[in-house]
Image 1 (tube, helix red, strand yellow):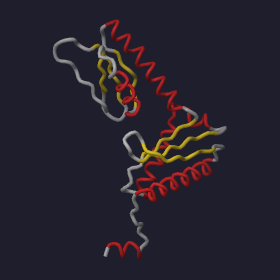
Image 2: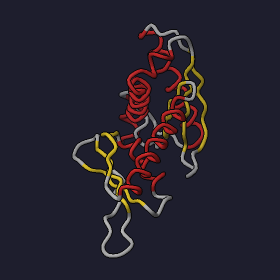
Image 3: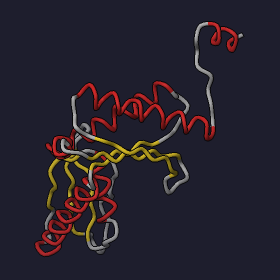
Image 4: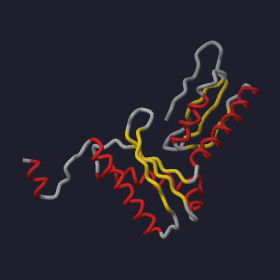
Amino acid sequence: MTGFLSRLFGGKKKETGSQADGDVAQLVRATMEGLIEKGGFDLSFDVKSSDDDKGQPQINVEISGPDEELLKEREGQMIDSIQLFLQRVVQHNFSEDKTSIQIDCNGYREESNAALIELADKLKDTAISKGKSVYIRALPPKDRKIVHQHLAGDERVKSRSIGDGLYKKIKIYPAKSSGVEEGRTDS
């Protein structure tokens, strides 16, 4: 009975596989066109569908154009906002779909990640040379994950997130060779 009522009242049929992936990409494309038009931006974009390293569907949107500097200002908050908005639009329209959406603007994400890794390396060296804990400013979860993963490759130091809420500081401290060590938490 549910199928009949949903057809009668305009409910959407749940799709799976490549048809749903195509619909998600089309929804992302249409939403981006609307954002650019309504925002009055001078931007263009390219939408590509693929699978991530775990085999999950992923949509990559590469934005370029004269107004791209607006997106990169304030540590890429506009890029993050567009990405979150697109993710929510997809979740609203395809509640069963697990497609990941990644937005980038002329290599900004790689530059930002490289700067975080460079900062982590400087602070790691300071922690090792002085034998003291050092801290990285409060960061969002995606940035903390990059730092924690990078530092996990060096057994001389440990890292953990400190604080409450979405933005947390990262504590980098020398690893103890004996005794109980503090654990690293990815949050």
